[in-house]
Image (cartoon, rainbow, N blue to C red; front, side, top):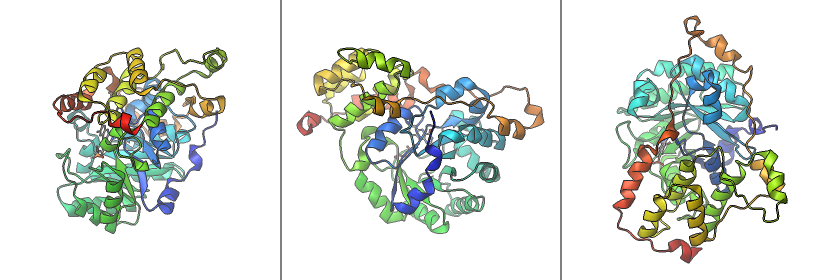
Length: 407
Ligand SMILES: Cc1cc2nc3c(=O)[nH]c(=O)nc-3n(C[C@H](O)[C@H](O)[C@H](O)COP(=O)(O)O)c2cc1C
């Protein structure tokens, strides 16, 4: 199946919109099905979770695990963590037929990432970042964008200088999570964000602390930024950019439908469609229970009562979640009509013989060495979910049946 991503020019989005509405890269969470969901509700542009570029270049299994896509998944930017030109450019070249841009992660502050010399550690050696961006821009044809997501450094002058140099190297746009690496929550530094915006002519995307559409518009007005990126806020409310405040029934229904339909193998569609009840009785394969359930936990945080949350958040199987959703919300998986199904079905990604650039750029002493970083985020619940669980358990606020009242 042909993929049409490459025809969309992300820079046109910045030209045509006062503020581009963007779903942030989120390890574990900004996967295909969530990207599809937020697009329905006003999001202009989505990012994949951060993918380790070296494993993407070297392992077919990593490629199949880390990146899936479909015809609705556009425009999409694939974010890589890398600290060498050959890894980033090699990965960018491999994925280029299936996306609209690639992004270099220069913001991840986690210990394991810093130990690998990736994420925000990269900003300690900005020359390396410039080199990666310059070479990627030279190797990857437009309209694919080459962008960087960074944090603030302690000194405004240094951050502004990095942004300027990135522009000189041909970066398409810059996303600034306007906090320093040691700061994970709290107020963002809007002054620094505005300074960066004023210092470069490429689009600047602001990120940090936005939890509503109103706040997104306000950040644009206060800093002049060209786009607003949201992470935590859009997990809680995937329809945030369509100016709603809590998750509503249609959004839950869409999430369930996307998860089930996008994972039905094309070969099985007719069998299900022809059966008298047209029921999707198989669990979504190729989608972990964690992914399906965690998103619902976040989406329903302000919708369920405390007691309902305690039950829901501890469910362990697809059947249990289905039963809960049907009981409380009258939501159950619905099979799409064929034409719609075809747009949501995963497309086959073929990377065979596309690693020529990677092989060309890889230093001679690394040839035949298979040493890539391994990061499997799906083998446990993860820090973020566990932290949220604790936060919710301590939460006394009872939003009794807001959903049902608004439903
Ligand atoms: C669960 C989770 C996963 C994240 N994963 C990534 C990632 O893969 N790449 C990245 O650049 N930032 C990642 N971030 C950071 C966000 O993209 C964003 O910069 C940060 O959360 C601030 O935005 P917010 O205040 O809207 O949440 C992640 C954040 C969260 C909450």
